[in-house]
Length: 109
Length: 115
Image (cartoon, rainbow over all chains, first blue to last red; front, side, top):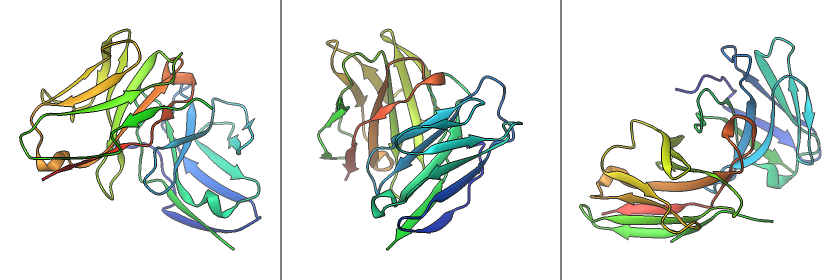
């Protein structure tokens, strides 16, 4: 089973920042934290990943706590197209992502 | 932007029939994966494939399933004798490097319906 904990749902107003938390207290030192999202029933889409340092790309920012037991994905200016299920996980074995239930994010006008 | 392509987008088959789901990974990628998602449920890992052999497989990936990279560009998932419970979306993915530190790109999926 997935070893991360995420809130089941979250609403966000269009244009505002969306902050998505994830707990991963069993992560080990060499495991990366990944975030993906799935819009409707499409294939999962990569967002960002990180090990220890905070990361930013054109889609989002990833803030990882110093003890690495939790992280926050930040969508800086949410749009309606960001409505999706957001998954947080870490790789505990080679080649396998363990998708959990994720957080259903609904962006409202 | 390069993408993973899956065909067909929807496949309907009779129970007990064999199906082959096809995927064209991104051209310079070396690692390939199959996942599935039963309607309303989580995305589940099936198998990973590297260097022409299976690297890891889940409990779901039993003897009814097989994967192949027949020609250097396609990556296929075969289900030998389909069951009703095999009905799901099947996603192919590929990555340039080992998935420990790289993104995987997913295709748009094949919806398999077993009747």
